[in-house]
Image 1 (cartoon, rainbow, N blue to C red):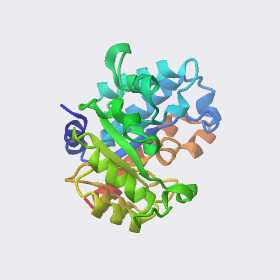
Image 2: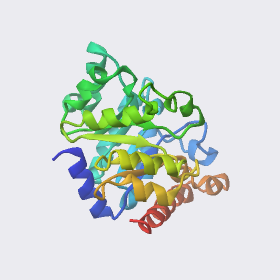
Image 3: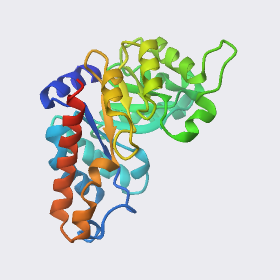
Length: 275
């Protein structure tokens, strides 16, 4: 079963399009949680236990795992999420050429343990830099299309000689690269008009829509334009996993994790109003 088929089944089973970002930023961990001396994989297990009923997918960001112990923690996290029957999308924004790209793509391989089911990639180097990812037909490949950060406009809004904007060219290329039906697009939720316009350009590609939650993205637009035939993901990271900061500040780590579950449930309910 390929990624988007599996994701579609999970969306139905959980009645949810929520992607939970697993970004265990050590600088954000409240003292009550940090004092419990939870390793990352165990922290993530607690978050998964609290949220899996409401999660269509988990999205760990590679930046929080790129150290001596991090990749083991990531593999443990992937295995635990899979045990709950929830797919994992690694937010790594990878791309390179030749052997380097092929090596990056091994994170999708089962040769070294539990592997991610999908990955985010950067299209700036062109198709050959993404080929090692695209050729894995059973894996999802989410191409950065239009990001929600303020600096994204520095390049993405540049107008080309053809009259289209650079992000529009990327969107069209992603559609062209979708030979195996495994391509998605990352499109931010903070500009609903752009989100709608991009959906009109590519009606059949599922979106990963970040920017909902802590970044204040448009929930209704994220659902209305982010899903293709009912399949897509709306991500919240900090808004879910750190929802219990006040409880932890009161010295109650159990309430910290319970709050993550409530936040995931609330976002699911919000999104489901527009599905």
